Length: 151
Image 1 (cartoon, one colour):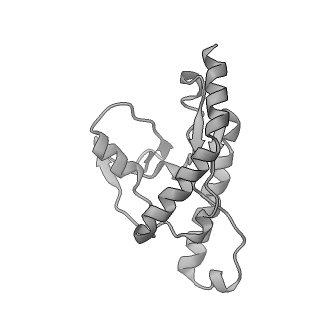
Image 2: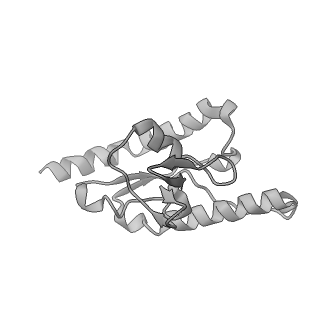
């Protein structure tokens, strides 16, 4: 998560899980920061959207799931302040996610996510299926990799 008071990325391994999940999902400008131990926290993606590096040495095989897509946008799609700010945030998340790709053994990136907006809650089943099928496409490789790690 991002500690707004200190201006740093923090990893928690203790505390009320529901509070930590809510804070780690608090997208700036959309949701209010969450106060934990006197500090305000927001989505960790502000500083580290794919925090693979902090746990790399604790894993035999590290799987990441990246749901941040970047496709080209037309001028019409970037016609207002809101769409421009959303695009800047999207590009920033996409770029920062790739900084930790080398720390991962496998990255699952569902195809077609660019057709959905982050708040398409009514499409959650379709979005879930994209992720499910992307993971299933990797299942054979995953089984081979895990078997290799165990030997």
